[in-house]
Amino acid sequence: MTTTLEIEMLGTGTSTGVPQLRCHCPVCMSNDPHDKRLRTSAIVRYQGVRLLIDCGPDFRTQMLRASDDNLDAVLLTHIHYDHVGGLDDLRTYCYPVPFPLYARADVLQRLHAQLPYCFTSNPHPGGPHFQEHVVDEEAFMVNGVRIIPIPVMHNSQLKIFGYRIGPLAYITDAKHIDDEQIERLKGIPLLVLNALRKEPHPSHLCLKEALDITGRIHPDRTLLVHMSHGMGKHALSTSLLPDGVELAYDGMIVKV
Image 1 (cartoon, rainbow, N blue to C red):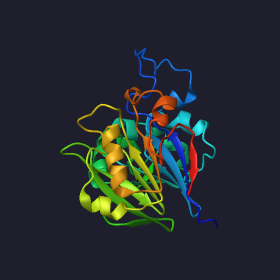
Image 2 (image 1 turned 180 degrees about the horizontal axis):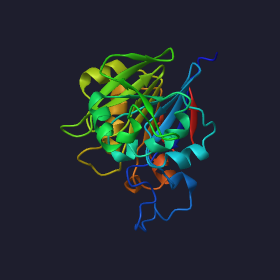
Image 3 (image 1 turned 90 degrees about the vertical axis):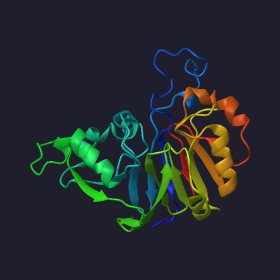
């Protein structure tokens, strides 16, 4: 079994996706496929295990074009629709046994209210049905792979989780990452980090803030995700980034 980790970017866009509906800015009108961004999600393949991080409303489309559609479990970062809106489409993964779903207790509680038919003891034939696993701040195992939650703040009140898996740290929707987590991540080989746009935002890192955090962690390589049209065109914005930092794009596959 190879110990190489592979991450496939299913989507790299923010909650509206890019192009954004009713927008005719140069980014949304671009013909460059790198400027077409579905909602942020990824598959991490490591030590023979295939982990889906978040399952947004573009999940079905993303999996139809993914390099491999096999999955073993889903890790959720938080409850927002652009990260959980595709859970119903996991129904084809839920048989013959319920599909493993890992999330914070508050996320699972909200999902029970929003999607009660997914968590009933007597599921409808063919419908989605999940095996729930509550995640706190302690490391946990999925099929032999150790996963370390990374608590970050989405805004001043909403704590959410990123995840460290082997040589990868995956963080989306952060606005603040405290000093303790920065120390724990220093020198990691691959950092995936959100950067919404160039201008500041109240609940997401902007480009400058993401670069500041990258500079403190000093990963070997950083991929920016969860980008809006406010990040600018992929080609131009990429040319302005420091060495070791890249804009990720939909369909990108990276091995480390």
